[in-house]
Image 1 (cartoon, rainbow, N blue to C red):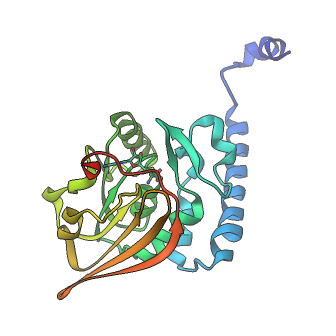
Image 2 (cartoon, protein in one colour; image 1 turned 135 degrees about the vertical axis):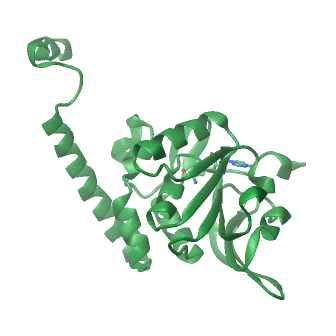
Image 3 (cartoon, protein in one colour; image 1 turned 45 degrees about the vertical axis):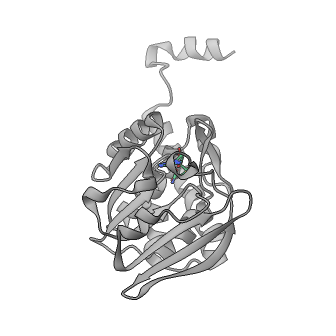
Length: 236
Ligand code: SAH
């Protein structure tokens, strides 16, 4: 049947949806995105307008493999290949809200994955450096970010355990793969007055908010979470 339809459409071209169909699909995605923001994000108490605006602006469906694009606005994480996942939308919003990135601030992310979290931070005006240990994901994320207008995000391939000293210190650091302890080099690369959000633990994990002050650091448990484990040097 599909072949017949293709045959019938041959003269007008059968290479995928037409421009009109694409525009209609994009409109549907926008509706799904706004429903997600209302029902999953705002309804659960994330009220920072800057976070909500960024979630509205970034097309999450472009950050998941095509076969999952219709699920991009559902209330759960999704596979992005290589056994990794893009976080549940609420978790991205929650972490962003407590990280409090301000325009012009320098933010380091460990665990680029799809690049979605990095795009949200860039949309909020932060200068983003993000590190991904798996080269194939890093490459795809950089290409996607550039295509979507977030080409200023710098995606580095490597082990984020040691951070990225060349650009340190950072106003904020967000870690989206779970180590068992907070990596010391990341604390060192945080500015005094800076904030770090990091999931800690192996089987049960707790999202921690670390604040660096002139006298040291304070660490607060903020939410039980489930992230993929951080791999690499942290395991040694
Ligand atoms: N922030 C991502 C989701 C993170 S999934 C998004 O918005 O899509 C966690 C990612 O951390 C995975 O891609 C995994 O490969 C990566 N990762 C795991 N250990 C790492 C390490 N030591 N350094 C850098 N990235 C790491």
